[in-house]
Amino acid sequence: MEQQWERVQDRMRGEIGDAAFRNWLQPIRVVEAHEDAVCLGVPTRFIRDWVVTHYANRIREVWAEVQGAPMEVSFVVQPVRRAAGGMAEPDPAAAPEVIALSPAPEPPEDREAMPAPLDKRFTFDSFVVGKPNEFAWAAARRVAESDVPPFNPLFLYSGVGLGKTHLMHAIAWHIRERDPGRTVGYLSAEKFMYRFIRALRYHDMMNFKEQLRSLDVLMIDDVQFISDKDSTQEEFFHTFNALMDQGKQIVISADKSPAELQGIEERLKSRLGCGLVADIHPTSYELRLGILESKVEQIRAEQARPDSAEIVVPPKVLEFLAHKITTNVRELEGALRRVFAHAQLIGRHITLEGTQEVLHDLLRTRERHLTIDAIQKEVAQHFNIKIADMSSPRRARAVARPRQIAMYLSKQLTARSLPEIGRKFGGRDHTTVMHAVKKVEELIGQDTDFAEEVDLLRRMLEN
Ligand code: ADP
Ligand code: MG
Image (cartoon, rainbow, N blue to C red):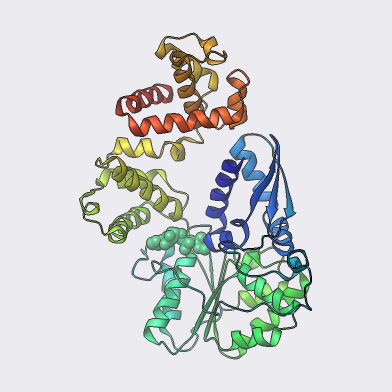
């Protein structure tokens, strides 16, 4: 179940972005698991409420996809004493549960400065411009190069993974470099809301507004996550207006145009849309190819190891990726990195065939209709054992190993969950399947003959 949660987390990270992921979903742990129900432990009440209103439905959907059956997901507050990872901020709502004799609430210390850390890789230099994004790019450059707001706010919108965050960070880097005296604040909408609500709760609004006022440029990313609570929107609206009146440049991003944003008041929508609205279109083939070429250079530079320079990516492979991975740039880059990592790991050159193999799950998930029965049959035939032995309790190596391989391939080539696979193999427990998968992976890593045999089977099944 923990593994499933990790997979769900991975998918969610892709959808909501790293920053939001770290804030809300990363600290969540599985506390109780049944076959079709899971209980997740959330460190504070505040986070629980937020996660339940913003992400719970999507988590259920993703989980159902991952395990191939509906999943009941519930959340409980499980305070942690020593906050881990992104959970450094104490939460007032949970305080009584953590500290028995809590004094009157005090504003938690604000350790992070308003200018949030920026990703070093997200600069204008590393942003590849093409037809689908040139308008948004040009607008971002204008903002970065102007001393007074050329348009206010700049509102960027697009689907996920198309470069909004990249452009915002690029603006911030450019301004910092050109004029270190100007201060730029970059916040995810969730972080913004979190601080906002905290300030409201502690009657610390003055301080919060003071911080905002000290900025020259304020950027709020993924504004669709601004909650639909009226009181916070009201405050947000006033703060926003005040900053605009003071001539501060504001940059906003969202997944939709201002008019299409849901749960946001009309007057806030029209205010958001009153500057320049620029959308980034889905990538074109040419743009994807351009991005891949630049990412190859970037990956090489990052690794900067003597052996990484030798890795050559044939143009055919880049063309293949640009054709096949059309969803968004994040996935495109993820796929390229996987291809690189694989080549390095096994010390071979990157080939088209190898690429298809490494990415088979990405490329085939939608068109796959392979059944566990078909896998069992093929594997049994290959090793010359009876199909019945796939579900028999016999443990002799001659049948146990092929059975493990069949379980492994079922996991790899179908969307079935571990418990479902276990059931198909004579009602075995999902932990047995997990063990089989690990074992086969281990052997593949150690024994090239074995790896080739499994690979051969996989190919036969895929054709
Ligand atoms: P969004 O905020 O729109 O969801 P991001 O800005 O996080 O998307 O982009 C996702 C990934 O794709 C990042 O690693 C980013 O650097 C990369 N990316 C997106 N567009 C481009 C581009 N035009 N050139 C280079 N990299 C890009
Ligand atoms: Mg983003």
